[in-house]
Image 1 (cartoon, rainbow, N blue to C red):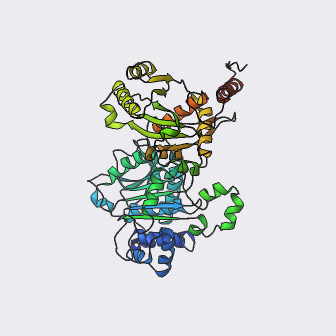
Image 2: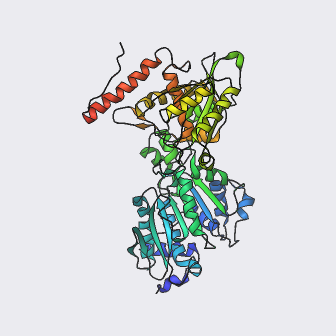
Image 3: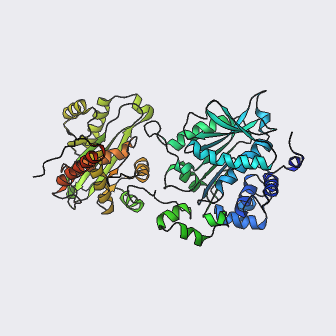
Length: 515
């Protein structure tokens, strides 16, 4: 049975008021969160709410007033808010309120139980939000206790058929459950095995939305600090900030101190002194990832129309990233070497998904060879995958293929070369959305040895550019950022990796003879 006081609760604001009294706090919601919840649930907006939402949503006053008192629930909330901005506790409040007063039981079969799914980068992350939900349930007298459904840990509450469940961010965990409410915790930071998933956030959101379909008032709550300028979180927030927001979508944003007035802006600067990290973690400003391999401004400067200029070209080339014909794509890029030492990428394309399943490697090489002929290109480079048959098929089509056996060792040098080309504005790339996204999202992982690892698995368009950088390092393709000592620098990078392996693992390394 529910506690008598709880029968009075009808809206989420009533639930928040009950929690506030139990905690002895003035309000479980800060002013911005209260204004957001009023808009989310179609409640009356006060003048102070309209002012707060104008800043948080970038919507016009007229657009915000249209949300007031409609009684119409938003189906999705996307909140880009700084660290310690009360995101997790507010999401926990939504979870408990929806479990008890959401009315989702009417959509369940007899004996069927539904889950409020909290999904985070790992189970420990989702547990933090669930712990807030447990405290809120205790404040409401719901006598919560922990149990499990299979290997999924769940929080059960007295008087409701819905449980709150903790999931890691993978696409298989939520399958098979009825889920009216999904809370995506720190979604911008979700990471999974890149060999298993491409665009992990998109894959997982697709898996999460399906079990929500049977519920008329289902909600998806996505909360996070920003992490780079790619991915579903950034794209969805940007698409729904302002008056162009899709129907049923509410996107809000803002720095820590505006969502949690207990923390001042001055205090945030005291704690985080690095300007770039402060901008992302505290001010909630979307920018390049903290470990981004390439500067965002350099990437943006590179993507301009790259037209042919035969009078100033010294040669053309093709680079490929061959596919295993499974999950990865088969990609290529065709470029030109310019007299001023610049590289122009004239064409980027590839085969992926269903298209890739209905063709074979030799047919793809024939198609690439035809594009090479259009660009008067007779040279191609690629890695060691299927190098024998690929080389033979290129040769039949009048293109010389050079195999470059590249590994993490040589990628350190290639990544450095590509980064210098971007910084020096020595590369122009014909606009290509997927390649741009992969370049922005690439993280350079600094190893204890001081060397960098570039995880390019499933980043197949970008891998073609890495092949180009390898060829530049080996003096097969000319770019002025790599002079006559390019090959020597490449060898030194490989030797540095072997020296690090030898020091850390006690193994025997090999070295090139530089004399």
